[in-house]
Image: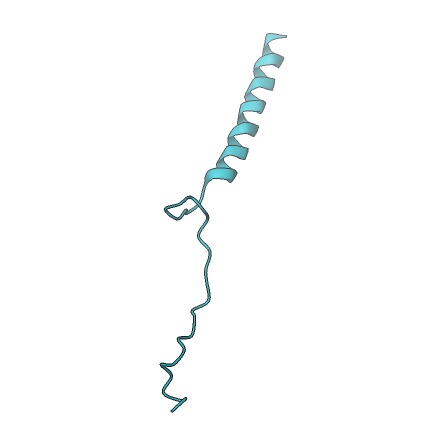
Length: 51
């Protein structure tokens, strides 16, 4: 009986660790939000083609 309780506790802690690892891993910005790529913005008024 003790063996089943130990095995169930181990499985529970492994599950909690996997969930914690997937929620809080990865690169973060300084404010804690995930880093996303943004498209470069075109600067208005500086194009040589508009002249």
